[in-house]
Length: 614
Image 1 (cartoon, one colour):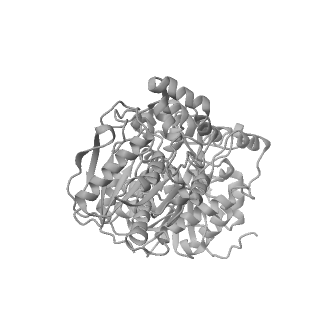
Image 2 (image 1 turned 90 degrees about the vertical axis):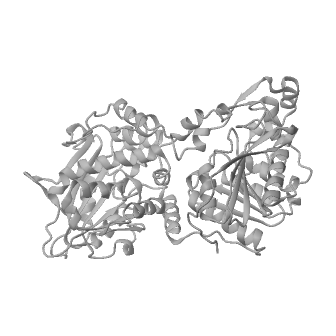
Image 3 (image 1 turned 60 degrees about the vertical axis):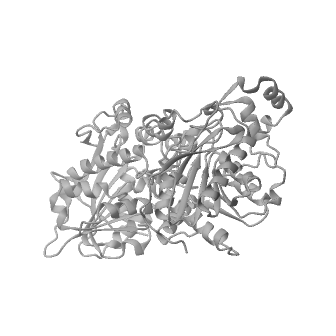
């Protein structure tokens, strides 16, 4: 088991230096820990520097008995020398200098951790650095044995060799043109812009220098490795790719293990810090320090539920909702552009580490408040007992907190927040740690045991129907969970050209600057379709106040309508305007639909005897 020494007191980070390749001063950041059992030395990737993983290094030493050293490779950051000028051999010399220093200074086992391009440096350093006991490669390239792409093979060609030798580093390779950094940091759309402003990032490599990365010939093949090595990758890494990491892993000899982070991308250290740090600490303790014969990644039950949700959505991705009728226009729009449930859930799970996703969560909260200005009139009457409400898709709890502030009467309710995202639930629990009456559960609300039976007077869904499949199963679960006379409030996007533009194409790609769409258009229910499905599940459609012939439903749309520029300014400035949403009526030209989202209320019959249609 991994000993957890949560948030232990540690000395301040120290800026240090060692003499590396060519007698250059190698810049080192030391994250000391007097209780450390080992030293983890971080090797950064393409364009990066020692500060790239500062938050990860702090997390490691504060939560585990580990010291962390991070350094700038030759040609990078604050290490002496011309930016972007280096050789792969110099990388190995630098790594040896730092690991020798770490071993001398601490007398502890030294484990290398290489990220992205640094993964190959870390692997070859296992042979080149005597002080290194083991290595962790987050993404790995074995360019000499298994070139990953035609572009790399081109770099290994005779013309490329001639160009590198003849032109040298006078020609600079613009890295942002040859590497999709937007995909590398896709979980946080604003992070790349931040890194572009960092003066210690290097965005242009000399041709000869970059050529050396892809043409290094190790003295031994990967199969001759004798030191323990852990190869890690994200399931959705769009830079290296899980399949390539697995292929490289198969070539490696000696004690080795493979870990693929379900739902993970290219930067596990940044976006899956808690799980990833626990995984590598566990591996080091069991396989390196303990010399165990085997190892299994320590995934907690709540994390496993999230993984199971992603697996479920991946399996359901091939088909739409059987209760919905997709028009030729719907199908044409989906062929042009569409997202996936999995990507949307993964993106939103980074609300606690991404400034942009925190802002997005605040924006979603404003939609909730606008919806509740309409929905609060339909709160069920509950006499003689403390009512209970489930908020499905609660995220980090910000909306619950905001609703409690705006509607004091909800303070008399017991509230249960439900979400599949363990990271958001962890943040929500911290947010409400000193507040009674609010609890949180990691779980998939489509599973009957999560919401239970006859437990709630109200269930509220927002950001749920457009972020999951099996809508009818969800409605059945909610119906079962409600007490007789209990009600369900919902907010969902309509399915038409306007919402495709807002939520699938122009909105995510232009307004929010995402790498890819984060909504699956097939999961957007038309109001008539949703009403039919709700009736089949056993719900009664509540009449609208003042308009008893119409269902309790209203549009919740931007006051600026389809104009994307005001919202883009808000996203860029991270600033929300006052009352940016308004209630709207169905549009005849959208077949009684809405330009954006719509909110509604339905009820479980009071006699509790309604038979859901099969």
